Image 1 (cartoon, one colour):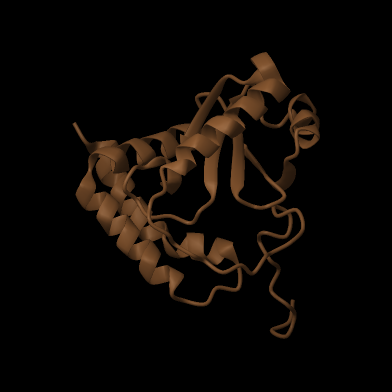
Image 2 (cartoon, rainbow, N blue to C red):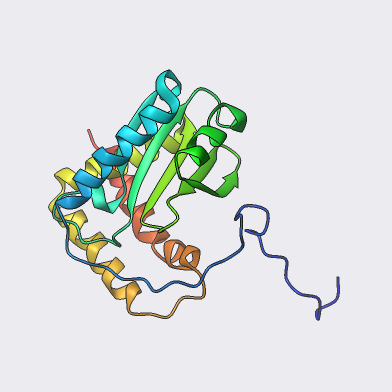
Length: 184
């Protein structure tokens, strides 16, 4: 590889449809996000039935009082996330679009891009990390405010891809997670 060769994109094999440039807009918490989760929950359960082993509202929209991008994140836990035939076709038929395929995690979203449906295995590290982070922010106002401040500051920057914005929050998330996982 010469110094003039393009650097391979580590997300090329993960993002279906490639990178996307989108404005990062952070808005005050909206109680309607919980209602939207319930609506989507009904759609997911209708599509998959007993294959839904756990379903949780996660991410910033699930934390009352926390400003967020107006995108509802949902965690769907299934028996085997690598067995896409067991859930992806039925979710696509219900109106979702597959966007991310990575080991241990899939993400589908609505065509409007206002709901992200994360699929992982029940009991997985992916599932547990997101639930711990959500629950910690719900009960620790100082960390909730710190996280919101970082998100608002980062939203004022120009991002080539939404994944870059998410990566920029990783140090703050790791610091909060260390407290959450080491708490008595």
